[in-house]
Length: 301
Length: 329
Image (cartoon, rainbow over all chains, first blue to last red; front, side, top):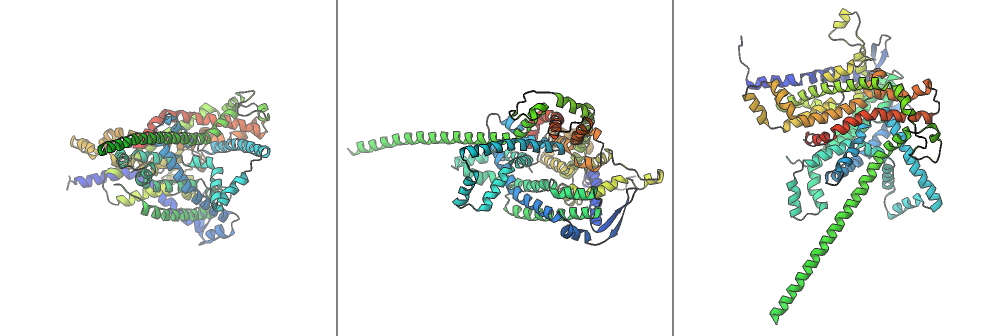
């Protein structure tokens, strides 16, 4: 029966293919097909039939032109979201690295603190987020109003302190950047919990002998950070930057706009054009950032 | 004379080094304690940022309507009440909805683990043509925002068919929307919620395991499937725990797919929570938004509690698991 017995290598190749087969079918059916259809939608005028089917007529780049030039808010939303991502990403990445280093050192109650820091992952769904936001406003509003009351009674003037920073010679944009971040501290902390986990995991995998050597050679903590810790976790910085960009993009207003255009105005063509535009821009950003970071990354293995 | 002088100098030096040692030790100690104080303050502050709103929600959920408008009430209610809980509890049909959601989440997670670990194992241990290209495709599925493909997916499941079988036998295509079927199908074919990431985690973990285990199993006559089920999976517990926690939590919190495929709100508790406020406002005639908000707070606690319990239960394994699960190449 068997004309030719398969070699072990061939057998293993076939087994491997069988292992990835379910994923591969899904990838072709759901991703490749959908992506092609989205491109088709974005280039055409989609009419939805009553039975739920649709017909498309090719209209070229009109949807893209409409989204960018004629839609009332889209280009503003796009620029705002992208700007927000670019502003937040460096801060989130360094913040999570900083926190991960803190959580990595040994102290009493570390398990409790870790549990608290990973809590935001649990609180991610729509209604819960809305309630949380309101509660945050309550708390911050409470604190802010107390500060305001104190300020009038004791004469503390926040503007005055901000002015000091500006007069020291710090550029205005920098001060605004920092105050802007502080104002959104809750969102930033919430957005960095997965990144903290990833950094924590990478810190655990740094061999302790490296720190011992550095200490014996007389390196200070500062030097150890820049010469040992930072290079060792640097491959994960790329991972985290990519994760942060995508995560903040998924939660951005561009996505909600595209969703609304599709399901409340039933304008599939325009919605697809919006999705395609934002995805292309994000991919470009990812490629540029990836190329820049990879050049500086140190690979231990 | 000279010898004496030298001896004196050495003695003085000795005293000096002792002094220096003492001083540097003190400075070191002071620095260390200063650092730990600063660390404590920072961690406390950030913990408060995370916990503050949650504490506020917990406190508010016990408020009675009179507390809401009492300016002297802060955090601790004057007339604590369980009314918010009992009303929200009945409007959510808590146990029924929760049961269905947990069933949905756990079933999907189980499928997710089987399919993604298989793919991960395939990518980690076997050589086949175009392997690098295919793995690049996995990375693309991680990076590609889901909303790019949402419309075709919606249309696909609105008129679902396999090779025209259903339109031939039933005369029309099947509408899979308003049910959980699309999500199960997608997860079964490895395109579920963040499946790409899980494939990546499993692949990195399997790559880190020593090859000798498998070789030993192979020599002892175990087939590939047997090796995967009985040798590799038991060794992959750390990454299984990680994937379980992530998958359960994300699936439970997911609103995107639930909305997109318009699944019934009676079976998805987080979805139901988003409509519970309007239910209470219209059915129970609680027209004051400040007071109906209290019910939402109670609902948030009710919805978060089960997932929190699961998390606390798995927390220790989860963090250990993450550290060893190979998220880090």
